Image (cartoon, rainbow, N blue to C red; front, side, top):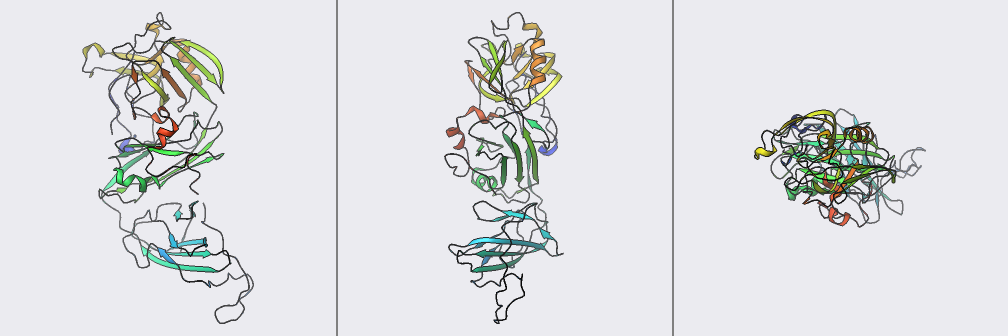
Length: 425
């Protein structure tokens, strides 16, 4: 079989906490997808303002000029996405930040790696008064301090829906991008502010960058190369309460911690009609395939397995071309694009696999080979197809790897160092 044009319903409000919407092989694009910042101040028996020695173990009283803290003291209707920052004297660094709600509860958070602000670990509460205290210490040991009390806004009525295609405690392939989705899309003028609230940490550390699709409905995060097997991805898409220029606010924070498993890669060459399969870089099997015929070609490019269905039904009765309409039961289906390209079992084409392309765009393999592949692959495993009549369209699936690294970083809303961004914290 091949391309299937019917898009299934996404999980409500793009929560994206269940399996992906099922289509079959088709041409239609997818629619609508505990830390405390700084360190504790140094302690000493320094004299207080009157010259009387303080008790041993008491923090030294700030001796430098007071800091101006943001959000400003007395501020009202502040977003619950607010971060704490201060104007720090030259040569000084923030040494501690505390944020306390009116009821006395302390908010946890951590300082950005560049020291620009302190980020609460969870969204602040709506309609709540907070007091922030920032202490900075210079190289000469002189400390400065500033305090601000501000109140957050009431819960907004107009929000933007968002989603994260990553799940706690799941294991993904080495090409799994961090995929976020927005509905409606984020305008270009807002993307830098939104991107600064999308945090990815890797263990072991690996650089990375974000890339926005043209209409702003999705952003992908990846490294210059595939993730190292065994990597832990810790992700927070911290959009709750973030203000956008269209009068909307981010709806929720989404978080996930996931693992990267064994390296497993598939490569398909239209010239040979063969798929070569690699585990940890070693060739383990070569499979005959049938790709899309010239009228409905498969896409050339690097894709990733997005979803797996051991059995399903491809229904293309809404295809505008009567020749492409069918209803067929499919085994061992692995989605590659939103438009409906899959790897799947195709017993009806086994006699031409390895010799002729007859599908509607999918990668046809035998029943036995499809079963074997299905048992090996993970969501996020890469497959590269080359030599077909069509190039993979940006955004038609998780297309983060269809671009070179230099091309990919051009899609970032903020400048990216040549080697990629490091940890945000």
